[in-house]
Image 1: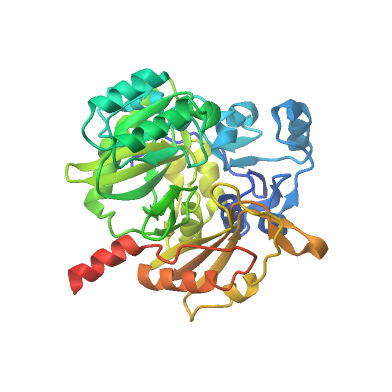
Image 2: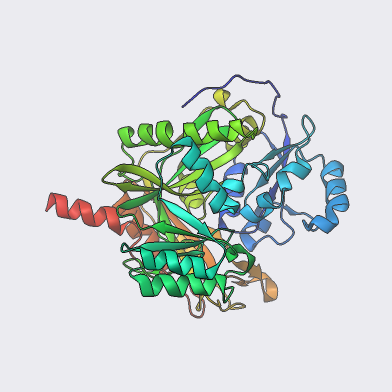
Length: 452
């Protein structure tokens, strides 16, 4: 952990909190915030899922920028002290810039300019290159002819990325030139990613294990969190199209102390230094998608918020007052924080709706949540974090999105946590429900090969 100088701004004894966002990540954050003795009243997004609505009062005002005046009146009337922003779309739209008003109100989440690392991958490449951060080499393109000429000039496998925000679905890993040409054409000519794909980044394809490395940052202090491993592709064995994330576990054994020190020194420190040279003060979560290559850790992408489903896995093992920690981060006092993670491991298995990630089926009745949460031996636990859920007839939850429930288990190690989460996920029922049964398989497979 790198240290910063504090600027004292005490957290209120009873801190009123608003969580912006509607998904599984936000439910996990709300679940942990509810355990804080400092929490006054918790308010949730007007479009919140069922799980969020069970934990907090629903904000009566839309977050639409056109409703800024009325939303700000709501914040003032209810004496909201801290806003916790989940989704990247709100941050990219300048939500933190608009409502951060110290000492009256703080926003946990970076400014629009700070989170450009996420919403403009072409700009991010420039920043990382100038800072000497190890990364997948890539070039931006806005014209299809130039992109195709570049693809045809390369002999190695490539990755095509939409430069803008694509809900985690803007990346195509290509096995050959034909696939790369198809992906570039889809983005630039057929507008498959809309405005997010108006610029694409064509990268070299790196090989190695990937992991999600998140850190809390208050401008100067960097506090590394336990590393996770996400599973992006929809099918078992990492097959099929990319999704927002089918599951994650933490901590990953890939993140040895030496590896984490290297990532902090070679990735996080120079990146934040580069932002400061641009007069950007980053406060919030900085999330690096890392690949462990033979040449060391390299950056695949940056996100500027808590990951989903990484957050579900992290919150299940979080030890300490999350509210206090988020306040200290937003107020530039992260060096005063005091938290850790439980031993053992946690695994989140995401139960999805039929048709995801293309066109998920919605409106289907969900059952089995209580049965899933009742599983587990002593010293184990199962938590079902709602994502794409809404209230149906008589308050019974129904599906309202592609990723529906994040079934999260805590146990003594990754193998047991994965097995328990998978078993619990099988108790979640709705028409067309499916999930991956192999979350954590990459390290478990390697462990089996090593020991056997």
